[in-house]
Length: 588
Image (cartoon, rainbow, N blue to C red; front, side):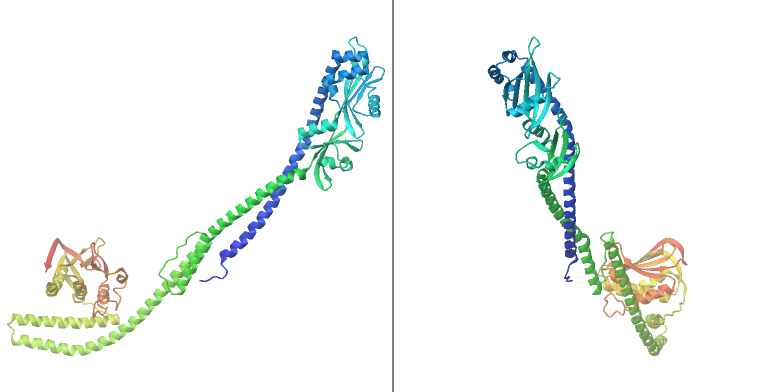
C-alpha cells in the first residue's frame, strides 16, 4: 500500500516543531531564572558590603592610629620637633614610613606655625588646619572632602617627654586611592564616594563608576539596593554612610557587564543541551513510534489486505495492551467471524449440494431397486433350481447358499443407500454373540486377505449385544475392506472389542497403513468425501456412521499408537459380559 503522506513523517514534523517551541520557551525561562538568580546573588553580596565596610574602616583606623602613635613616640622625631626647625623636621620625615607615604602631611608647632606642609596647596592645608583646631582627642581620625577628593586625616598632638605640647601632626590619605581600591579588592564591586552632591572619588579606570554622573547616584537611598541606568548600562547600587565622616560610600555592581558573559556561556550550554536533548528525544520518539505505532499499523493494514483478498487462514495476535492492541483484537474478532461465516456458508453450500446429490441418488436408488429385484429374483430362482436337481451334493448346496447370501447383501446395500438418501431406516435387531458375529465377518474376508498376504486378527471378550446384524455387518465389512486396501504385504489388521470404562462397548479396527490426514479426519464421514480410492463414491463411511448412530452409538477415527488408522464403533452399554476369558482367533 502506497501512502503519499506517511503518518510518521507528519508526526515527526509536528513533534520537531513542538520540541523547538518548548525548547525555546524553556531556554527563555531558564535564562531569565538564571539571570534573576545572579542578580539576587549580587544583591545579597551588596547588602553584605556594609558589614565589610564597617570592619574595614575600624581596622584601618586602628592601624593608622597605631602607626602615628609609633611615630610620635620616636625619640628622633621628638628631638626634631623640639628644635622647631622646619629643615630638621623635614629631614626626619623620610625616616618614618607613615609620614613619608602620606598623601598629605601637615606639621605645626604649638603656636600654629606651619613647619612642614606637603601634598596639597596652601589654601587646602589652611582649611584642613582650621578644621582640626577644635579636636579633643590626642589622636583622632577624621575625613575631609575638598577639591574633588576625600582625605582620611589622622590628627595627633606631639607631646614632649616632659609633657609639654610641641605641636600637631596631620597625616592625610586620599580615600580615592585607599577606600576605592581596598574595598573593590575586598568586595569585588566598583566604589563611588559621594560627598556634598558630587562624586568625590571613584575606583577609576574604564568602569561604570568612572563614567557616572553624580545625578545618577544622588537618589540612591541609603542601605537599599537600587537599580541605576548609567548611559544605557544597568547597574545595582548600594549606598552606605562612611562610619567616621558619613560620606556616602556607594558600591556599584555593573550587572550587565558581569552577568552578560556568564549568560552567554549559559545560553551556549542551554542551546547545546536543547539541541542534543531535542535530537535524542526526537530520535527516541521516532524509534518508539515506528516500533509501537507505525509497524503495528502497517501489519494491521497487511492483514486487512489479506482479509480483503479472502485469505482468512491466519491469526492476528495483539502485540500490545494499548489502543492498537485493542484494534488488533477487534481485527481478529472480525477475521474470526468472517472465517466462521465463510465456513458456515461453505457448509451450507455443501449440505445443499449433498442434499441435491442425495435426492438424485435416492431417485436413482429407487429406480435401481425397482429394476434390480427382477434380475435378482431370476438369479435366486436359478440357484434354487440348481440345488433342487442335486439336493444331496454338499458343494452345490454350499455354492447356492453363497449366491443367496450375496443376492440378499446386494439388495440390502441398495436399500441402505435408499434409506440414507431418504434419512429413514428401520432396524431389525436381535441378540448376537459378538465374537461369533465378528468371526463370521472374518471368515467372509479370509480369501481376499490371504491373496494379499495380510493378517486379520481378532481379540476380545465374550459379549452379547442387541444389534441389527445385517446392517452392523455392513459397517464392519466397509471398515475392514478399507483397511485391506491401504495395507501392505505382511501388515496386520486387528479387530478388537470390549467394554470401556464408561460402560460403553467398543469394536475397533486398526491397520498399519499411513493413517488418515488430520484435515481429512474431520470430514471423512461426510457424504461424497473419499480418501483417494479409485472408483470410491464417498458414501461407504457415511452410511456406516449413520447405521451406528441409528443404534445409539457413534463411529470415530483416530491414530494408532505407532502408525495407521483406528476406526472405533462405540455402542451404548446395553450389552453384558458372559465371560472374562479372552478369545483369540487369527486367519492369515
